[in-house]
Image 1 (cartoon, rainbow, N blue to C red):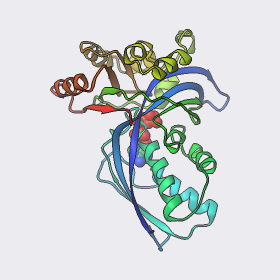
Image 2 (cartoon, helix red, strand yellow):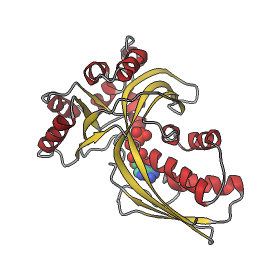
Image 3 (cartoon, protein in one colour):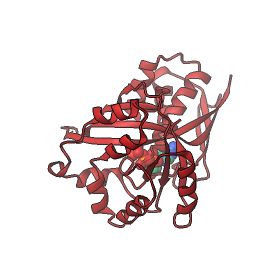
Image 4 (cartoon, helix red, strand yellow):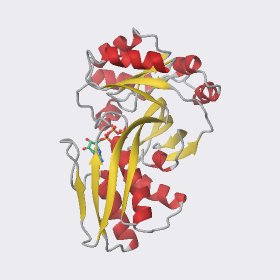
Length: 285
Ligand code: ATP
């Protein structure tokens, strides 16, 4: 096999608690990941030139070594002495730098794909160890699980046996947010001490969007809003719909509503598209 086509899914964070700043300047987190039905298409074609080539028409996606898919391919070549190269074609549907981990997901998908077409036979444990070196959010996408608890920088994954399939409306305003700035601005003394990941996990296990909606939590919100106060308008607009809860994903600017039904999600997304070009109805995948 010299080619493979794969889907690379996005995530939402239903919960982010920042526990502490670490000596390496990263933060230890507790987060709940949900894989959602928004995806990029990735095609990998092995070549004998040894070169890594990225084809992507999205202007914000790097085409060289800064792309996480490039990093993954290069890391595998070096570590295992691979002389083959690969052409990676990315059809981008996931908004870039949005808090939806599109880049990390592409990295994970490339890792899984190259494991096949370069016949590396790496175990999941090895894949996770390599993925964690590429980015904190990569590991989640290597587990083939819709739900997971993330700890450490987010790279220590415990898949959660949750059957819930929720509907959301995700709105991605066109403004730039850098995760680094959001974490730099974070004031850990102002974060909510009471938020409890176990209570949300129970609500998710009980398949209750109403209870889960009430328990959505993101410690980064104050920092996100201090950098981009206009995002409060987006959140308040989402609050006008009959969602069970509204929150930011990751370090933003993606903001989502947890909908009680698919019908409500689809109607709200159609309505929100009058104001935001990037409003999507998505479900757990
Ligand atoms: P996270 O939720 O993990 O913080 P994000 O959704 O905020 O991720 P990404 O879409 O992963 O952000 O992109 C962040 C940056 O990574 C972009 O500005 C882009 O330059 C770079 N990047 C590297 N590889 C990719 C890729 N394959 N797709 C998109 N962006 C990429």
